[in-house]
Amino acid sequence: MSTMARGREFEFTLPLGYTDGEGRVHRTVVMRKMTGKEESILADKRYQRNGGKLVTELLSSCLLRLGELEKTDRSVVAAMYSADRNFLLLKLRSITFGSELQANYTCPACRENLHVTEDLEDLPVKAMSNGDSPEDIVVELEDGYVERDGQMHTALTLRLPTGLDEEAVASQMHQNASIGKNALLSRCLKSLGEIPRHRLEALGPKILSDLTMTDRRLIDRAVNQSAPGVDLVRRIECVNCNNVFNTTLDLSHFLALE
Ligand SMILES: [Zn+2]
Image (cartoon, rainbow, N blue to C red; front, side):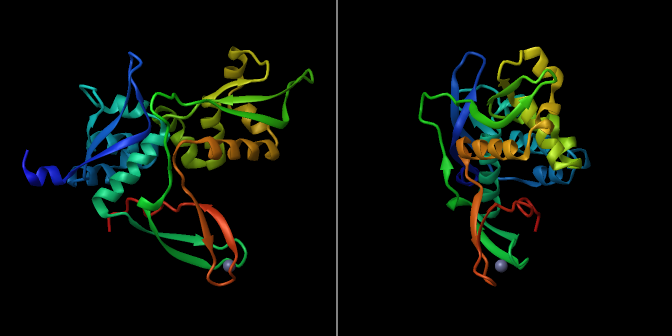
C-alpha cells in the first residue's frame, strides 16, 4: 500500500458494533474518503426519496473493513444500528470535507436566523463498554394505550433501530415526518404491557398514533437519553435576544457538494 493510499484510509471504533451470525461483535472500522463514485451515489435519483438506502449505499461503498469480517457488503451496513451508521456518516463527512459544518437555526423566541459553524469532532459520543450488548429502551407511559375493552397498557419496550428500519420507513418519513416516526417506532416496538406479540404487529403504527402527545414526548426523551452514539442535541444562544435553546444539529448541508 502506498503512503498516499493510506492517507485516504481512517480507522474508527463504532459506538455499538455489529454482531455477526455467530454472535461475535465487530467494532473496528476502516473507511476511505468519498470519491467521484460516492458523488454519483449522492446525485442518484433512486436514493433521493430513500435516505436509509442512500446511507447504506454511501457507507458500504466507503467501508473497507469491519472488525474480523471477510466481507462488508451492503447487507452488513443495512443491518448495523442507526447509531453506528450516523456515527460513520459524520466521520465520512469529516474525513472527506473536514469537520467544520455551516448550520442554520431559527431562534424559537424571536425568529432570528442564526448561522453557526459547528465542529463535528466536538460532538460527544456515547459508546458502549466492551462486552456489553445494547439494551432495550424502556418507557413507563403516563396515559398509556387503551384497548377497546378499556384495558390500559403503560410499560413500553423498544429495541434500537437499524438501517433496515430506516430503509423500510423512508418513503413515509419523506412524506410526513410524524407518520414516518410512528412507522419506525412501531417496527422497533418489542412489547407494550400485556398485549400479545401478534396483536402488536397487527395494530402496528396505529398504537403510536393513538398515544397522547404527553406519552409521545416521554418516548422521545427516553430514546434521546438512552440512545448510544453521537449526541446531536445542540445548545444554541441567540445573538439577537440572548435566548438559549436546545435543538438538533442541522445536518441539511451535511453532504452538500460545495
Ligand atoms: Zn432570539
